[in-house]
Length: 341
Image 1 (cartoon, rainbow, N blue to C red):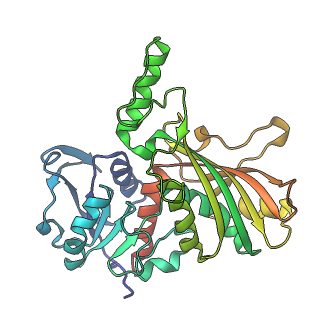
Image 2: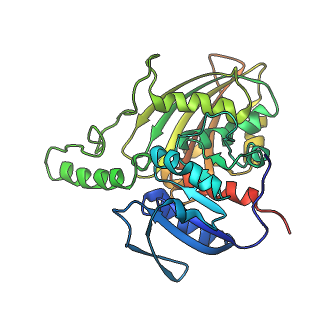
């Protein structure tokens, strides 16, 4: 089924509006002048009755029920995989389109997995659900896709440096609190995360799979292949949590079938949609999390020849996990669906 959203102001529901991504979704709907006729804030019974301000309006959070989606055109879901799975049928039966930020449907056949700058055409081939990719995957594919369009890509090796925001707003607050605990001479004890992230880092805490890769690493492998249409791409990842609030970083090694001149790669990435090139070799200045926090672009830099392989390039990137890594990508997907008048 190919489906667009009507070319009129839309009735929009945000499922999970109180979380870090939900709050960013609300900000972006206003910031990007998304055509909203009516906005519903939906959550569990625990959050129902709370009020939030949006675009000058005071809105009351409603407990989500099957009737919540009647008359709704678009559901932006960011309340976790189990919630998305539970309400999927109610949403689609109501005729709404769900853009889902969880991992629930990403690898499901027939569900598009979309990064608008990379595979926008996939968004229209939905059956009521479109999946928003994992944050690290979104940031990575923005850099990989422009290069793969010029030369066949054969292997990717990536190490991620992932911020606390990937574990939610409570993890961000815990990082702040435990950092002060360390500065005060105390012993930090993680509760939201399994270990304290304050002045520390640890390998990603998602469950280990049978192949000894964690779930987060396998998300990157499988999702990148699906988005880029490269099911046989050789890909390996190591994911690490680091004491940064909301921007992820990635060290990437990309192998091609033939050499890829660095100057050409730099030119291509400097012109790529959603990418900002930050390179000042003389000052040893390249992308940092502070360059992208609260901003849309993925910053790419330190593009260089891999001295161990003539067919490989090395690069470094940083992107805001809450924004382009989640909420912005979801809103951009919704924008793809709006029929042009």
